[in-house]
Length: 377
Image (cartoon, rainbow, N blue to C red):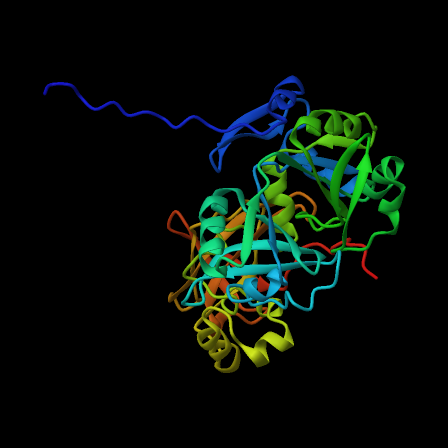
């Protein structure tokens, strides 16, 4: 009695590149339980954003969750119970974006799935969700399929119009790869998992490397004049301009793929066969519509409209809320996404964002805000 309870702050986790970030001027912040660089000395968010759009930006995304799904039979059969995408039909070394669903059709996370062979899938999930994701997946898919967390690997992303040129200097096969394809390759005695994908709207690659090789590989990439470190700040503005969702902001467990304007993640066979969590609700919304939708928003003026800002109709009716918002350096103006009542979701609809009691005009616009530069077939 008499001893007051002491509150302790959980120690932040570190990626295998933590020391290198400090050595190269990273300004570190807490993010998803990790100590991560938000920007770098001599650059800053604006310069880092524009550098990625014009050259090649290097991102440490080692906090993301990497895992393998393996089984004596195709693990895609089991995975299809909890995602609405066509995993069985995914060809070897092709990648598919999908969402992890709860029983009510809500989104527990969004993830990338790569088919390696008929008995192996490679998953990448969000950092803040990975522990609960992996526990949920293993629980739902049953004992015939095993999930193995790859905690001994780091993950880098090289993004921008010069990414192909740089990567091809190290790995000549990189130039022949197309958007949303992957391969394994040996480099300097280490096995890398290379994909042509990313989260910026630019062409580029994501590279899974052994943790003990991450610093060496990152240093090699940074030795090229076109490549600069890019922090979380610019990563967010880049993905927002590209109209890409951030889990926990634009997506959550109370939001369905239809409400999130992601019905394209449900391929034709899955719509016909159903068999995934929340299928009745999701397909019912696809047929009959839903009460709200995610939309792009273009505020007037230069000041950004931030997450949580309420949206009103011209008549003064509250019709939605901003879920992501900021300044878009590539478009030289504010950009935002949010959810609005379906009656107000049409492109061209005029709304008011309420900022400190003042109505700020904005317009519903098509996403994305920039033209993506993916290298497709």
